[in-house]
Length: 291
Image (cartoon, rainbow, N blue to C red; front, side):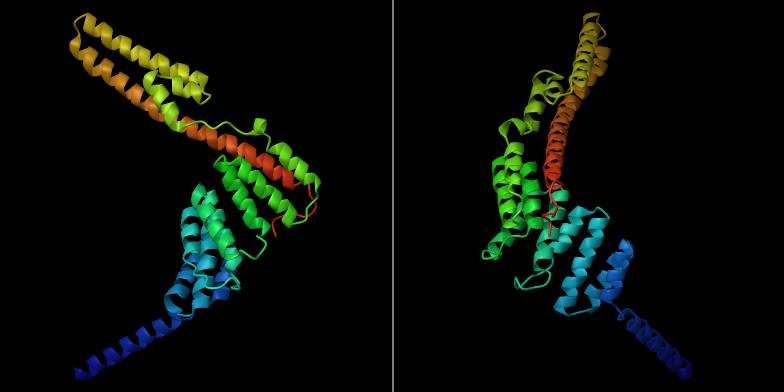
């Protein structure tokens, strides 16, 4: 019996040691290979293996970077930005210094976190006070400023990008032409749209550019109100209150929420169109600014 227990213990320890040894066989080259082959889920798992078993700071940073790239390719921009944020850069001479800030700011921009992206870029500019800011990072900054309707600052940043990269001077004229006040998309205030629909059903929809939807909202609210009043008038109090005014409350509150969403969507669509015009500007040059 003792011999059997000893054998079982020996086998258990051997299996545990073998599994542990196999798990320690991590490789950053393998992570890179998985990323290059678009096997992003597998790449993330292998990067987690490196992060768990390796205590080397360089391995940790590289694994986080590759994991962030895989998450970005999976369109999980929030998690990708959080992953890039975990990379600790101690010196501007670090090989991942510029790439880390670029990828983090880009993922925050793609996730719609424009203020956070600008904070990342401002941090990079502060740490790189004596260096020329790369065009790739300035481009992300311009897109964020456009998305926040900060067009004057976006124009100045664009002119800086042109001068820093010694691009064709005709682009300065094209930039000034693009950033004329008449070309700026109008910003719709979602709260204003919501309040307008609270005062007059459908008015917030019209403010957001949806005339037909606004008319339908007005008709639905007016119909529910009329139904409720009419039933109370003919002494059908239960039907009037429960059905008529319940429907009115649903239509009214739903219309307010809908008009808020429509205003946000209108802003996103207008800015997307403006940013596309901005990106078309850079297709006119032979040498792309993103370097």
